[in-house]
Amino acid sequence: MKALFAFVAGKSLSGRNVSVPDPWKFYGRNIISEIGIRKSSYMMWFGRMLTFLVCAGLTAGLPVRADQTPAIIPLDEMIAEPEFWEWTVRDLAEPLGSGRFTWVSARQDALRAGPESPVRFAGLPMEETILRFTDGRVSQVFLSFFNRGDSGVIEEEDYRQRVAVMTDWLTQWYDSPGRDVSGRGAVTTTRAAYTHVWTGEHHASRLEHAFSRPRPEGSHQRIFLPEFITLTIIPPSPSERRIAGDEGVRVGVLELRDRVHRNDNGDRWLDTVPMVDQGDKGYCAVAAAERVLRYYDIDFNQHLLAQRALTETGGGTDPDSLLRALRAMSSDLNVRVRVISQFDVRELGQLVARYNREANRHRLPRLPWPPDGPVNLADLFYDMDIKGFRAAREPTRLAMTRYQNAIQEKIDAGYPVLWSVMLGLVPETPALPQARGGHLRLIIGYNLQTNEVLYSDTWGAGHELKRMEFDDAHAITLSLFTMEPR
Image 1 (cartoon, rainbow, N blue to C red):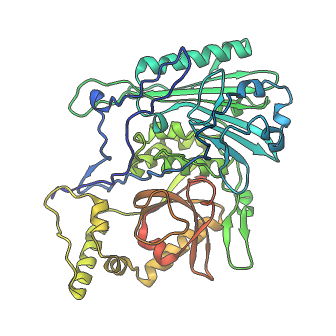
Image 2: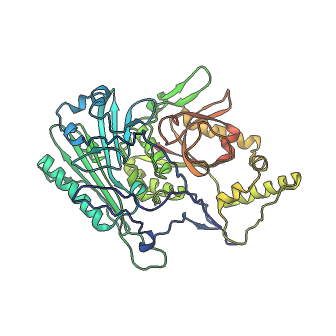
């Protein structure tokens, strides 16, 4: 029997029309149809593991009055100051005051500005600017000059021109051509990811850029698909591996256990998991993975993982592809990927059968099963009466004990749990930017006294620590997995 399942989650694939200085040219038009890339979600035939597109959240920046035209803020001139790495938030308040920065979490360890910000580097705009802080002082600057999630699709000439501009500017800034540290496996038939580093007396920089060569459906020719151009700047470091971004996880088991925070009210949670705000990209899956890696003290670029995991522009990531990408990168990252549970076709059939029994009992419309054609998994879930759905998803006592024990074991060991869910089936507080559809978030704790899961979303401040009863959490769960240090 052939049935097709998919989550459809996404925003427009068209690029954003942006005015940028020469020699950049930004082609804001939508060329999806021209190059043959489909806007549909990833799909698999019945009989294979279900795949799910997750994440299409939207966030908003700080409001600015219509009659205000913020002055350009030259971030490169600020970073060039020898004492820049000693600056605190107070020192940055005046020069960045009109930069539309917001804290990504209540911990106030990272400031973020989106594409509307007047901040410039080498006179060029950014899609995203992030300033990270350690012990109250600036410790890293991350700049995204282009990424497919925010920018949409651009042409090959535009991409190469942007890379050339940044490479030439950095070469002049450091009076050095930099070093290619891309490493083995950086270039394959289907993708390429390049890393160049520069080191100086006051700072070190890492320029990363990538493109893919997918083959559109029905075509024998591969096309050129730009992925991202990012720049990371840190203080000068004696470790070349640090600026190259390939240190790998070095945190120990005992140290992770010590990171579990305990409250008298029964809360057990990982309170030092960094926040990553995905912005208006559908990057919840790769952003959540970046959060875990940063928790393990790895300076990781989510856009690299997005390329590996086939994240669609503004849409979402197929968790099955995400798992494959993480496993492919696990050796370099020094982590193991462990699947705790995963929703599959057999379980779906059992769920529909249980739901139809509830529908018969309460005189509700039954769901047709088995299907005789393509089925949208999200539509299938949302076609269910909510009470019937909850009854069909209610676990046995043994199943709930296993679910709770698995989460408890991982949290007690200091491991965040990546949690794939279907939104919109149970109420959540605060309100979510994404009301329904597939989503990936982190479980960062639990409370057995209140029977709650403690979780976090990649939507910035206000989403750092939230709560849900175990019964509700189990009902919306699609999969659970971890990345654990080797």
